[in-house]
Image 1 (cartoon, rainbow, N blue to C red):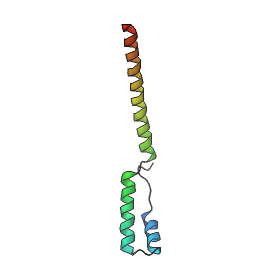
Image 2 (spheres, rainbow, N blue to C red):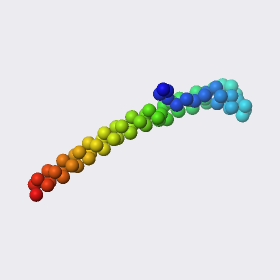
Image 3 (cartoon, rainbow, N blue to C red):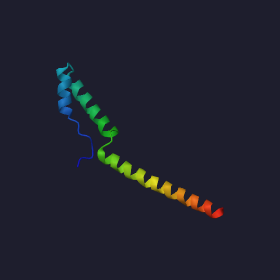
Image 4 (spheres, rainbow, N blue to C red):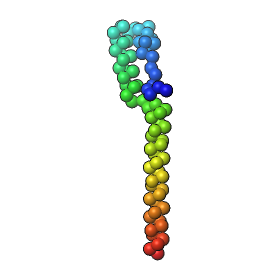
Length: 76
């Protein structure tokens, strides 16, 4: 499975050229946007990994809460 967002730089550059950009401008813009997308967008795999980490942390918080309540009940 892909570990990054797919972005067709060639098609994007062609659209820019048809809109009046020079070939150099279109290529630089396409490369810059591809770089931003690759660095900043989260993939489905990124989100799944984040979900798992959050689930583990939530479980730890719940376990700590139960332990605190049990300790308080013992004191009373």
